[in-house]
Image 1 (cartoon, rainbow, N blue to C red):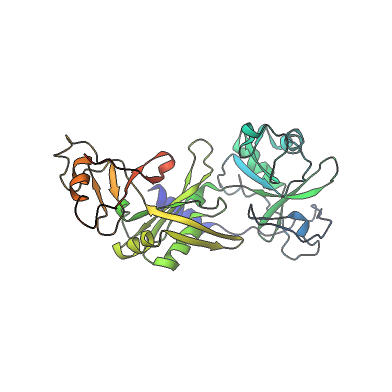
Image 2 (image 1 turned 135 degrees about the vertical axis):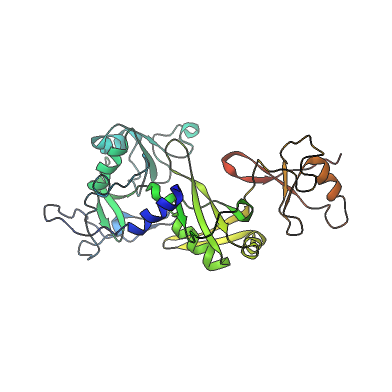
Length: 326
């Protein structure tokens, strides 16, 4: 299975170490600042004499690792514009520069000091990584703007194997014991999500980070599968979870993972002409899929009239919908 292969790959990964003598450190300033909103450390916080500095060597082609063609770059100079960012990274290969709401804002400057580099080829990402310096397990490279020269900025590539992690390979994955986690910080790996959820609720057998199909970059959501009903119910009953790992500390939403190919659990499709059930009830007294007829019948009973149906929508995100009684 692909998931099992990713699990084996994750176990074989080794931290990058070793600083080649030909490469010289280029960090020069020491102004302590942290970019809390985007989860990266400002390059100006780097100390030249730090023992943690190393070069990533080649973490791409030499060991077969694969990366998304979309790369986060943070801590940019405030006066750097799109053309200057493009010029700074064009040496690694053809690319375009993007940031959230860029088209709507019509701004030439990244508004929050970060942007995304969308390379045409994955080899460009590997080339960029090879030219970075590592400081405390983070990648940095220098860029210049009209007023700031050689400012270290953080480079955050996404390794494709970090999108899946199997914690218990002996357990089969049950979609009915799987939760959707919304608002997952994009630096968070599947392994880290699995460990956090297992520590909180136990019984985690798999975690996955949702990625877009073209660039395979995290979309900000994830899935966690549990091996038992007790852990699953505990997670969806909590509704929210605090994801704490390294620089990350964020409260995110947890919902049942809603499928779109399930038959009604009450009538088995007999009352809806064999069509898949459109509604899922996430209340712990139900936890079932319903067709419209059965939903109306079951939830007209006392105590269930306030249950809200969940439906599957874009990006696999379940959402509550108003229900009109028949």
